[in-house]
Structures are given as structure tokens and as C-alpha cells.
Length: 380
Picture 1 (cartoon, rainbow, N blue to C red):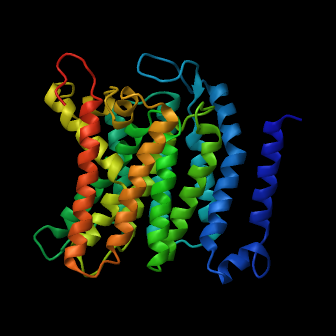
Picture 2 (cartoon, one colour):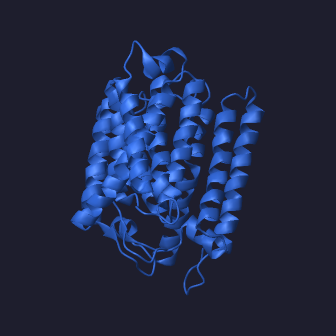
């Protein structure tokens, strides 16, 4: 028996035990009484991905959903790109096992399913930018229909419409930000795990338990996937995985109650946790428009340049694991700032922490400029 098969059987055994231990006894009940339910869901999702990732790679080989080498890719052999299948199924298994289905959670599950199916079809057959944008918008609208939307003063003219519109723009932006960041082995899945764990910690610390449960399920799925996605990757997330992770994280940002009496904290907390992908998509978009590389939404979605933050770091001499590690350190620094800012009593302390975050982004800008492509016409 090969090591891979032994690992698969071990994962199956762990998953079966976790799913079988039902209350009022066993590990499941113990996590409830000890306040560790998040750990139970994390382990379910992680074990499920251990089991499902090899199966999703086999599926890619059967249907021909392979990521082929090219000039802009960092791999030199065809790699299965159906890792999103394992991420999606593991995440849903954990939520279904938790058996807590509020209106908002049902909306997240339904919208997430739309995003996953859309990404899977794109990985398999290839879809136009217009089709992808339409269904991403549809998934975002589904979430808002189920009551999950950006807090906005509804007393203002068209307050309800603005709330829905901004929520859709937010979700579509985060979906594509994570898709754009999925350019090297382990980056998007590691970032998904770190961001989800930050949301988990902040949510648990503020007694937002449903938020923590969803975060734990996503974090477990991402951590489990790293077993086959760390360099050299044996399977990629594909659009079905990267867009799904981005969508769920975007929903968590809308789902959380980050501050009731401090708009600066409420606004900055999810922005800091998701700061790196948000910064990357804004910076590269502005750069590409200035350079004339893109002239519309369609070109923006289809453009595949090597000008993202991770590409720039690799141009400076970092290898793939070092690049992933450096970006994660920055992400953790921003996330810890988001965590700390919630417990800062003084207004001055809040603004000092925000200033610290701005300085971190300035460091990122310097690195982006140092690592820019030395090609004709690139200005930033």
C-alpha cells in the first residue's frame, strides 16, 4: 500500500469518526460544552479535504481540466485544476454537520454553490468574462436577498438600493481579488486559511459564534488543501476554488458585526483582514489602466499579466515558499491590527493603529515598484 493510500484511509477514518460522534456523547458534544465547536468543524473540513483532494485530481484527469504550462505560468507540467471541488464539498460538509441554518447562512450556501459551479465550468470548459461577471453578480444578489448586506444608513435617499449595490460590488471585487492572487503554489489557500482564522478569532472573541463556525469550516478546508497545494503543487484550486474562497470571505466580512459605536473600527476591520488581496487588485487595476493594458471590465477580467504582488516579490529574488511566507506575515500583521483596534479604548489609539496599517501598505507599494516588470510602457 502506498503512502498516499495510507494517508487517504487515515483521513477517511478521521472524518468518519468526527461525523459519527453525535451528541449527547463523544467528541462532538465535548466541543459544545468546552466551547470548542469551532475546532470540531475545522477538523471535519480539514479531514474531508484530505480525502477529497486526490479524488478531485483524478476527476480533472478524467475530464481534461488541467492547467497547462505557458509563458506566464510558474509550473512546467500539466496540473489538475479542480481543487475547488474538495474545498467546496468539505466546507459544505462541515456546515451541514453543524446543523445551524439561519437565513443568512442559507444565502451564503446558495450563493457559494453558484460561485462554485460557475468556477468549475470555467475550469472545465472555459467561460467568457461576461458570463462570469453575470453569475458572480447573481450570486452576490442572492446573498443580499437573504439579508446579508453592507450596513448603510437606510434613512438616506435610496439607502436600501445603495446598500445592495455596494454589497454586490464588494463581493464581486473580493471574488476576483482572490482569483487574481491565485498565481503561485499555496498562496490563495494559505491566504484563505489566514483570513478565515482571523475572522474566526475576532468572531469568537466577540461572541459571534455563527460567524466563527463558518470561518472555522473555511479555514479547515484551506489548511487541508495545502497538503497537496504546497510547492510543488499536485493540484490547483482552479477558479472553482479561488473564487469560492473569496466569495465566502467576502460574505464573512458582511456577516460580522465589527463595531456598533465606532464607524472607523467597523469599516476598517474587514478591510485590514482582507487588505492584501484588496490592495493587489486595486494597485494592478490602476497600473493596467494607466499603462493602457485594459480598457474595460471584460479586458480587466481576462487580462493575465505577471504584475501582481507575488510576481513582483519573485522578481526581487524570493522563491515561491518565501513569497507566500512574506505575504502571509504582512497579512497577519494587518489582521492583528484589526483584532487590536477593536479593543482600543481611545480614539487616538484607533487612528494610530490605522496609521500603522497605512505604513504597511506603503511598504508594499515600495516593494511593488522595486519589483515592477522592466518592459516598455510600464509606469507603475
